[in-house]
Image (cartoon, rainbow, N blue to C red; front, side, top):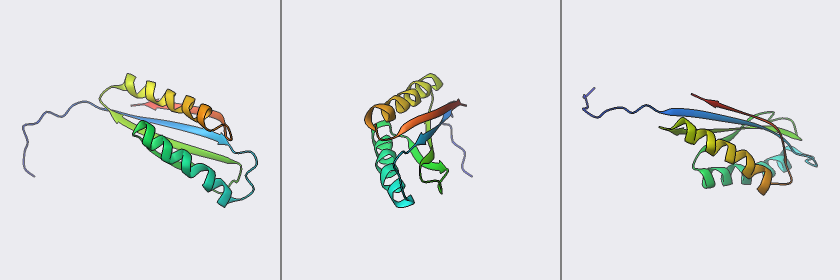
Length: 104
């Protein structure tokens, strides 16, 4: 492997998990049609990775995971808190039941 003289910066990898309630969903197809625009919008607005990570077979609940990588853990925490606020504000058809932020 070629050596490089470039310095490797310290980085922070942060994870946000959000449990959503999806009242009114009557099928997995309806659930996916509700979650898909949320995940796409989070990626676009915050430049992070977002996916459904749990409760995939439960119609009216979902766990979403969002990850963010940067050199500033404080920045990551601020952005991930804004993600929660964004979901609550822009997607009133879902309810945030709980969320957790993990900074590493």
